[in-house]
Image 1 (spheres, rainbow, N blue to C red):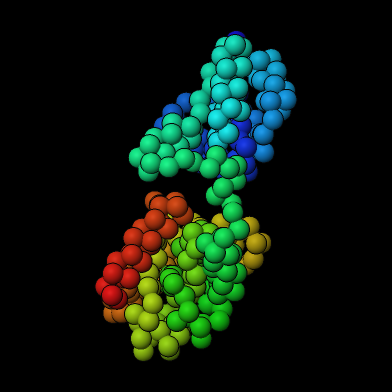
Image 2 (image 1 turned 90 degrees about the horizontal axis):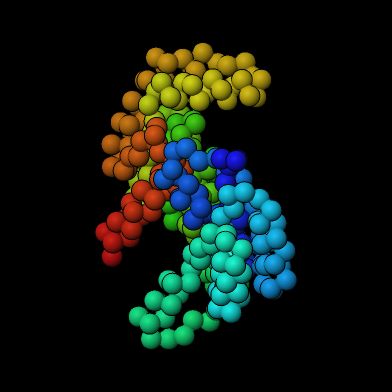
Length: 275
């Protein structure tokens, strides 16, 4: 008997929500072998039957689903039970309970979170802004940013900026070579908007930079990858953050998501202080 679990993710929309939920779920189990079978835009009984036929042929099948149409969700649950396939709805009870609390009926509209409203277009604008203001570009427009990330090379400024942009924050990131590399506008008004410094342990930074140089097949410069030089660079960066009273986040053992969550909290505090 195979020890590999066949995970069927069935969604009536893009499946993005389900992907994230399973990602969080599997993180709780250290030893799990699995294979993902993703089915997006599943909106008919025929589609469900075909998926279940495939699931029945495999050992250790488990179904997770996000289907907002009550009738279709019940059909999936009933047919799965008949075939003795474990099946778990992710949103059903939440929607029902929220409906009771809010005292209103849910729309049960698939892809409701992807509606083209003002929030959607603001997010797209934030993504475009962030891409244009990556790695110190257009620094004369820093005041237009919701958030500015400052840090030495290889402290995850760009991926964190993109993640924040997907959350709707217009984000600029500025590489910190030394204090002179900061734009004059920012030095004269260090709290022109929410500024956050990013740092990491020198040893980790040295490894990242060496790997970067190897992947690009470039000749490394001594200062860029030398541990003692990096220690001085990191220390100087921290002194710069302290001088301008910018909050500092050590990203050494943080994922981009964790770093972004901390930045969003800092941004909330910044806005509250501005009021």
